[in-house]
Image 1 (cartoon, one colour):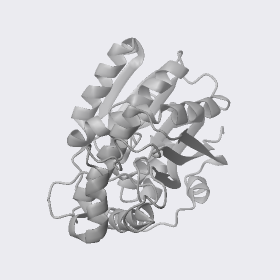
Image 2: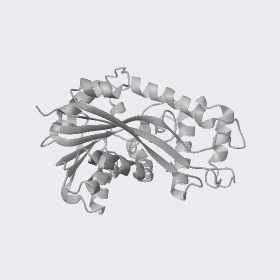
Image 3: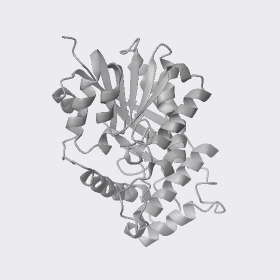
Length: 316
């Protein structure tokens, strides 16, 4: 399992990218618009760009966590992707060792390069392997284990949460990002095409996400009551808080590039499932020369809501 989506992690199928119930548009290898395979190495630049754009949201979430987890010795970022959030943990908790864990070695290589570049090499490590089993290779329990939109890439989420909890030190905190709201980039009425384009893309993303979940090895359907699932893993003191990213119009250039990449991926992934009129609208939105496209129009923005759920391993 590799993540996303802080990228995202983003994931591609976390709710960091733009559409669906917030699930990012996936990269797939089939070309027919209905595949759910994800090429994480191919997604790496998009995952990095997304996480960097979303850094203010992550900083607020980490600051909130820091009020509970005051002096962690070991922080593990499960499904770390290219390590943008892992390095934010290293910056925010200068006394902690940070381990980025992921199933994609190319993404972990990016994480190591980022940590080196930012001066965190001496207390930054990586762990490659299938999750959650690879966490058994940790030298000692974690004081904070973070899974940012990576849990939903594991077939049995309940079992994965139990495995995460086992890797916590007594009094340690598990924090997951799951849920939130679909990210929005565009006004409901674009001035051309049928209003409500993003809502229709949401519906396609919901269908994609459901297929992705059912095709995972050992997939188990689960009611997404995260507080209850954390409690079933033996954890207590469940808390939930949602954090916003609000980049108002007119969006800066890097946000426009991210928006364009996300819409382009959605157009490619959903293929023939897209209404032809909506595909034509996307084509126009993605045309750099069109004054009504996302590269040039003044009313594009980024508005996202990501929900963090935490719970604590009891001290016995």
